[in-house]
Length: 99
Image (cartoon, rainbow, N blue to C red; front, side, top):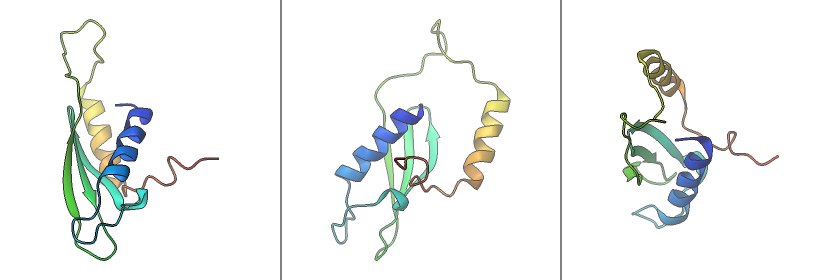
């Protein structure tokens, strides 16, 4: 998943998912990625007035490691991703801020 796909996913979540208790729209700063497993993204959505909600988003498509152009993933990639996500606060405002 590249940055553009991730941003589109977050825009879709922001547009379509609301706090189940008050109906308010989530801001980008209230959406945190808690994990990605193949084509499933685990999100934490935090309304300022209510308890956080965990959501899973299934992406279309399938990863086929036998595919000729499939990306190669090694153990260092997994370790680097884990280290990044462990320290990542989940806020996307700065990443996707328009200049």
